[in-house]
Length: 264
Image (cartoon, rainbow, N blue to C red; front, side, top):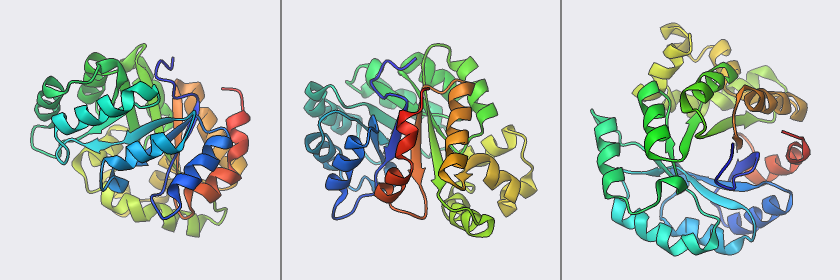
């Protein structure tokens, strides 16, 4: 159930000198949403620029870190972009000892309809928060089995899966590319806890084992990646975001464009 206009398949955009032109081409290829990762959001006006440069795709920050941008500032951004009908506010964090309390306080101060907000969520309590105080959840570094469980917990709320993809058929190279961002993310308590929750061992997480990498990162040919995306759809995902590693979003988006024509 997608009530946000995300469509079945989106792609994460790299910020660079040509990112707005790239966004237009990816939109023309059929990607129904364009996402901007939190690490790429050096200024919120990046999102305004994306909305203005495109015509049909829904633009989503994945995510706005709530410990960087105030509720008042993100509310102003939403007010600016709401008339387009193509903006959904993705929120994540805060990286504090009591993140649930921090997020609840932020949402209390946020003048944005909950029906236009997605929360980054992994654990059961965050998923519950996404179900009750937002339109749904966006998750990263999860397996299709996790997706099935999250679908059950969220009920009718929106479930978006942010899927790292590496268009590389050599296992050694593909895993090396995947381990670069994972080496940082695995040190973040929420991700580590979720890896353990999904059944991986502490050793898997500490060493970023092949088993862990292969389970949460889709790598290989376009057909291999298509199979992983379909597994998430079949498990109950409303939307999958392709997050390319080791290649530009434009190059990967072109190579994987056949996926947008695959019936969900």
